[in-house]
Length: 250
Image (cartoon, rainbow, N blue to C red; front, top):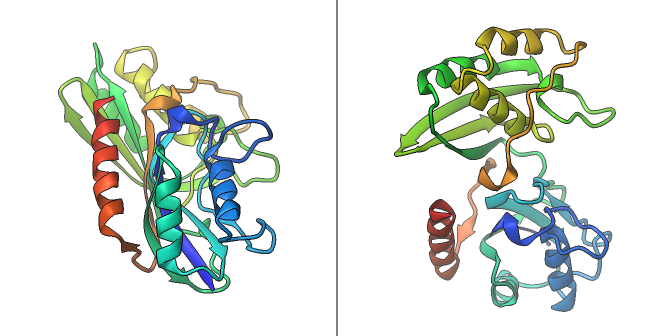
């Protein structure tokens, strides 16, 4: 059978999500634990797949992995829950044999931007440039053969004291897309960049514009949505709530 699980993790404790030789990564630790407990034999036979590959320093309240296994859901939850202190496994689901978590219905990234002398209204106004479908070549690290055109469904702002919480919603994101957008918005808020320059960069992907990349530590992969609901187990939900409160306080 094919199983999907939801996980959360503190990105500060790992060298990113994707497995790397000799480095501690989220994916690497998960695979080692799955093999150790006999849940899978290897990544190829189990068709191990991940929804999103977050960078070093980026945390997640919801990432999703899927694999083929003969283990029961209760055994998977029990073994993985006991294995980690900085990876939380909190939900599980039987999925179709061809399920690939990368093909999600929607994703939500959250960035906590510290406000000093920023003009928040200018930030919100400039952010409207990024919603809808655009070529994000100048606002992402575009890998070879990857389409730079993406559609951002919505950007929502919530201000709490000196923190501007910025939520991005889209089906897919490019590498560094959110962090490069945030860097540009940060500069707009400080008066170092104008909205017209963002429009120009979006309208001219063949020209080179570089507005920087914001730090990864303030970025969280908040949610990934599919056409079905996961089964959340009680202990996992409690751990997730405590972990989310910890992230907010950092």
